[in-house]
Length: 406
Image (cartoon, rainbow, N blue to C red; front, side, top):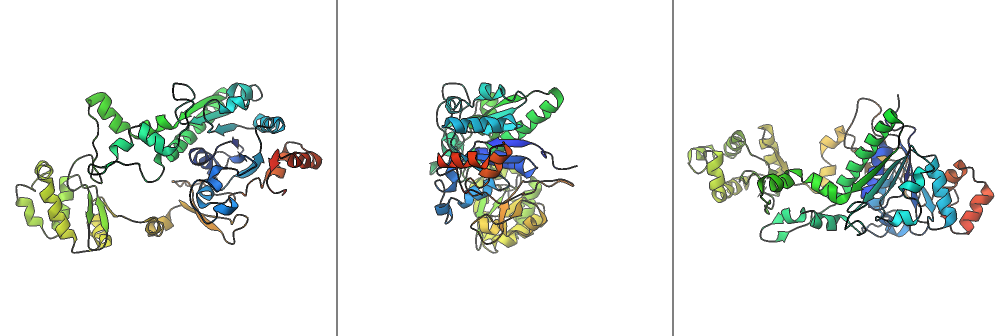
């Protein structure tokens, strides 16, 4: 049968994290993704956003993570010839995705109305920080700013230290995941109606969606979540982070049988007859005593052993791993999240990069090619549009097209 998006062509004008993550999901399921980048520097993630020893030649590891299985065309969209090439690409495409600030794409004359005129069945996804319209539409946005604006930061952190941004980029990546679903839905709708669709995707909206329970607590109950550090919204002392003999574990133990298993495995089961510890309500009331008791008991064994011992008894628990430890987890060897990707130009060996977070029984997600050097597929893409070698040479000479000749 083939993968879900076989035969689908995506023109990807996105940079950094949210947009590239979106288009990667489509590429993993068979879409042909042509990444259009500025000729000078390319995607900011290549060398300017996060530290990497490979940044000096435009192949920083965070860029590699989100841009394998794609082609790269280095094209100056501000040049009239570059815009015409972009329109030619769009004319034969199924999907366009961009993450320019609201208004920027229209100034390039590549907005929805302009491209709909050349391709009325196009699915067009505009990914912005705050939406394509509204009082904040034109504002620049990165993940951290949207964490702050959305209330996420105010509900994350410890009471002693105050609001804290989440260490990685949940808004960017969740927005990309939402966008991939929205594009897939629009393509499915097109199969039924024959019509294209405009998708207005906002990082702020995605940040509220990922906080749906907390938002509902306010809109329905009138309560605002407080800072709880590593504990749980249940405010139960058995749902927290605990030190052990050699590291930390986090437990999400919210049920009576969880507490019974913890106390029994720790050799303090007799304490469950103590009125302070007997049931969920009493443990919540006497949380400090419960926590101190568990900390004392957990000092007798390692984090890995506590995770095994309590995990066997049905307690939701995990050792707090570093990324290196997480990647080495034996469970991952049974999954498809770490894919072997061919070595990009300038690298000596294949690499392990993240793929899709699911498997299927047939035609599932695969990595089709190595992350591209800036503009490495330019000649191939331009020949596909019918341009001659002379035309391509002239465009390169004028700086409209960049990257290696082939």
